[in-house]
Amino acid sequence: EAGVAQSPRYKIIEKRQSVAFWCNPISGHATLYWYQQILGQGPKLLIQFQNNGVVDDSQLPKDRFSAERLKGVDSTLKIQPAKLEDSAVYLCASSLDRLGGLAGTYEQYFGPGTRLTVT
Amino acid sequence: AQSVTQLGSHVSVSEGALVLLRCNYSSSVPPYLFWYVQYPNQGLQLLLKYTSAATLVKGINGFEAEFKKSETSFHLTKPSAHMSDAAEYFCAVSDRGFKTIFGAGTRLFVKA
Image (cartoon, rainbow over all chains, first blue to last red):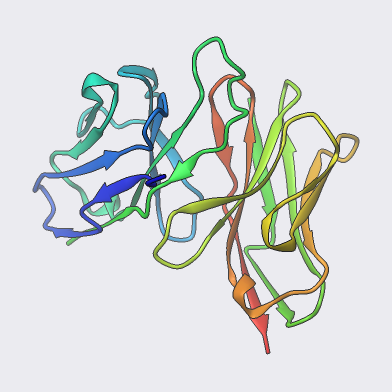
């Protein structure tokens, strides 16, 4: 089966510009995650979708970050305006978890990530 | 609230030596625990997971981990390191409520 697809793989922008990342999860996976991974750190959850509804966005900087998952399939993450501290790898992951099922038992499948550099 | 602590940001072993990567967790409910591996410029890949069945969990590439409730630990081991094991390893804990917390990671170096 095809894995989690992300694009672009690399992006360089200047501060105060905007940028968008795209993710296509594994077919049939109900849950989609966006993580921010700063160099030398573990992934930090930004937002989690269950189908097209938001489950957790408590760590999403909502003044500049937004995300959507229309039709419960692919998703976009946007940053506007970008700051220097947004330089990181943005990882998308998906899992089979479904509401009412055994939450958290299914492993997450990660895409290759988008490396963002803000200058 | 959950948390994960990985002891040692870098571990270096010789090829053929034992690999031991340490992970301690905190969780208010019985946790699910995971180890992921990340190779350069790639996403994370699941190595193994503990979901309240056997406490000794075997994963891919010869890795295994043992869940020790009394020590709140889930250390990752491999009897004999291979050069291809050089990567970053992440321990993660899930509270079964959809939230997964990742540790800061341990970079494994394997010397020839």
